[in-house]
Length: 222
Image (cartoon, rainbow, N blue to C red; front, side, top):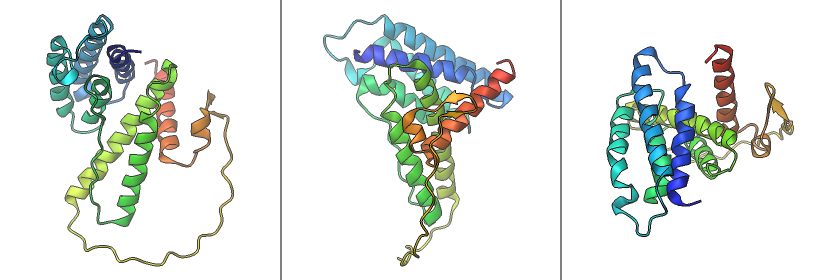
């Protein structure tokens, strides 16, 4: 699949997810504008032929206004929708992957949370070009949850006072844990094999939260 088609598909699926994404009422109008720009970008990209030569920065000229508008709109939402998510649409065009900057937490617990979150994001990104639309929607929903979590950790890093370098400690022996049972379904939804194999990780937690949010939206008639 050529890169315009890849970006178009991502824009379309992300718009479908955001259309039902729960956000405070004061941000719903902005969210509607974001969805409209994504749908416009998807329609234009699907109509683009495979480029003979790459345009500057990889984004077609008639899409640059949409991309800039999306960046500005995402920046107006203070929480609940990370601006980083736009990078997954533009990455196939620019070749620039989404980067998750380390925050340098003084707290060992927060540093571990950040590491697990970053690893989970990388695991999901590797699956965004799965040919099954329903799975990619779930991955995008989980990525939104994980990026929001990383943004919260970043805010904590900015608020926390400077801490001295942690003192290395000899870890205590860890008791052997019973193996986690591999589930086949969650709330009636089939569990992908790679999620079932990592059921106690942040990737799986984000996947379950995405399923919960989708089922809640359906239950409310959304």
